[in-house]
Image 1 (cartoon, helix red, strand yellow):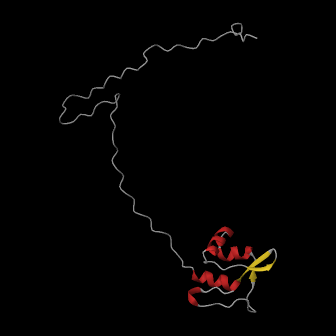
Image 2 (cartoon, one colour):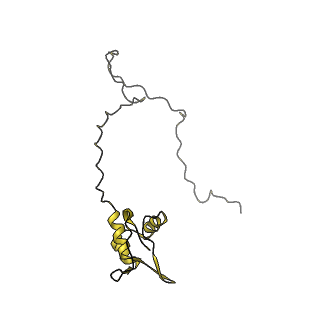
Image 3 (cartoon, one colour):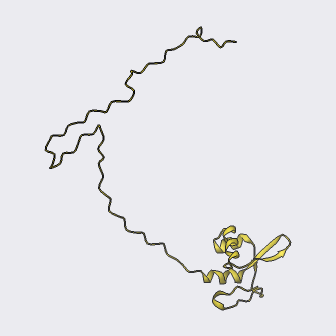
Length: 136
């Protein structure tokens, strides 16, 4: 099997070529096994060679050629930070009104809006053990 970077076929299996197990492939490429599998599915990573029924390996020359085709990318340049926006003040029923040129009246606090339920709150009364009756 040959891996062809930029149209140049590379012969594999020569006297100097070795079959590498996954642990060495991971060290050489820096990829996880699932990422290598995904790249194999789209044809962007060398295919493994079956050594025995339960063992595969990758040709070292193919991995070297694959590594040579990868371009070195620098870190992306960060976008410049946007200027922070001015805080927006929200007027509520309890906050004093802001004075404007059209409204020369001094700042006066608005009265609090009445609650829907104006009945006084009742505290729970503690019950003694004699008052509890389960009806058994």
